Image (tube, rainbow, N blue to C red; front, side, top):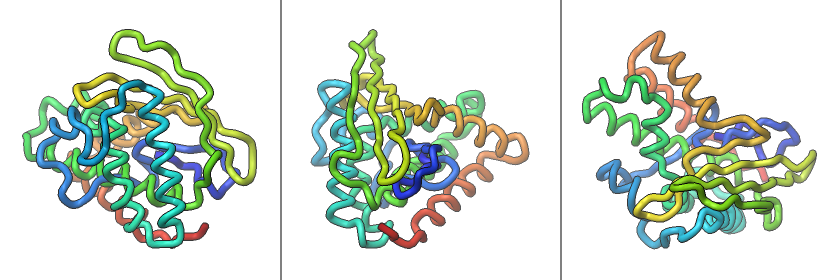
Amino acid sequence: MLSLMIRSPSRRWNILSLARNGALLAAALLTAAGVLAQEPAAGEPAAPTPDAAVERLHAGLVEVAAAHGDEPVTVRYEALLPIVTATHDLPYIAELTIRREWAGLRDEQRRRFVEAFVRLSAMTYASRFGGLEEGMFEIVGAEPPSGDRAVVTATLTPREGDPIPFEYVLHETDGGWKIINILADNVSDLALKRAEYRRLLAAGTIDDVIAELERQADDAAAQRTNR
């Protein structure tokens, strides 16, 4: 999800699963992919509107950075996991990234892929936003929902460099509005992931993709905190 770190003036963020750098999900998380897709995480209320979902994500990132910014990435990961799973439809996104191959996967392969994808997504948030501060994220607009889809725009103002535009694409589920794609500086996180996973699948199998996601998540977890 974010190739752009909040501590850096660089302008390439890949926020959702940070396909190239990091990731999301935890221990007792996917009892069933469908459950995560439809119901808010325990203790996290369903978002009644698209902008409420984005606001909850931003607030959660700031809260966790304030409370655990100097602690290991794994500590922030545990704190962020319920927030990320409540505001993103991660099983749905995971399926979209390999839609062509999804139908041919066994249930066990789907489960392992979704678990790795969720863990990577959350771990990436944890590794990239340890230095986030109140006011860096700001929602600047929200289009009226069209059917079950909506778009919310925001900006991220890092400590150095220009504000970075974000566009959140959400859809409505039984568990409220959830993020299904993020465009950071006009770069689609979903498109980046699709391209990376298709490249891996062209040269190998779904097991190779899962192994790569697990490696990226482990790398993110091992990063040193540097506020």
